[in-house]
Image (tube, rainbow, N blue to C red):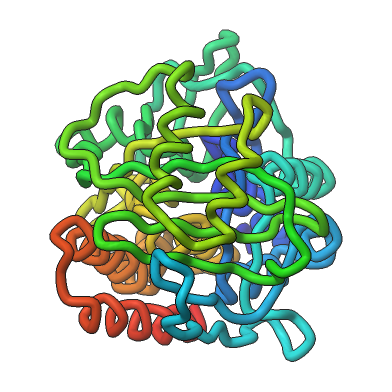
Length: 376
């Protein structure tokens, strides 16, 4: 019997798009993946990952390479801005009894791991290419590409990120990303011997943290309240980040500030969020990842829920139901989990900006991590 989905196009080569290619190929579904960036680059410093993400890496088959090239540890140490201990946030071991409950890695390193797995899966990867038109009918989707080629597919997956061209084309009524009132600074610094896992220092209106990304490096992050989303020139990055660190008296952060220099890979990103209402599919086009549920990093779960989307969608596409039933099942399995991450992350940011109830903040963190621990 011919399956409902035999040939899929994925538009976007980020984490969720690559994960979808890997999972669909496991089920012998033909995959074309197009990525507009000819260099298939991933920007940024480190990325923190929870146990649910590591569990998803196990499903993808990349957990071993992540453990070799990244860093894993249990728990998150919580401190006041002066360095005095507040407590520790436990991180359940969701990827297996021998795999710590959290970790971190450089974004470009993780992207390279996924890119190797995507190519090894047999997906047809075309870089420097995107779509120019998508026309869906009852039996398939005709896609014209920027290189002049035209191909027909059973399903098109939009995984082209926060400012998705697929979303704008197929879902013109969808909301646009919105600025949250915070920005995040990141940098890469040497890892001292006393930092063995993720650590955060919490001040009245600033939150700083570090997370090891390898045996000898860690990445620094600082969440800063910013009333307006204004561009910051790169020449200001180093002095501004040093100025923010100067607001903490914790010895570890003082030492980090002294180590920062022009080679510290400093990046700044205004925090934006997006939650597109149901459904995330129309005819033979479906959206996944940041394209429909971009979240702030407060729960360290943005990459997680995008990769989970890919896993669930591939599971549903392997069946023999009608395409509409498959996509409905995908939607039903993903909506509440993704909504929770986006909205709870947003609430954590609101509490931080307002200097609000720390007990509410802690309760939301605990509740969210418990829900993320549940199977997908």
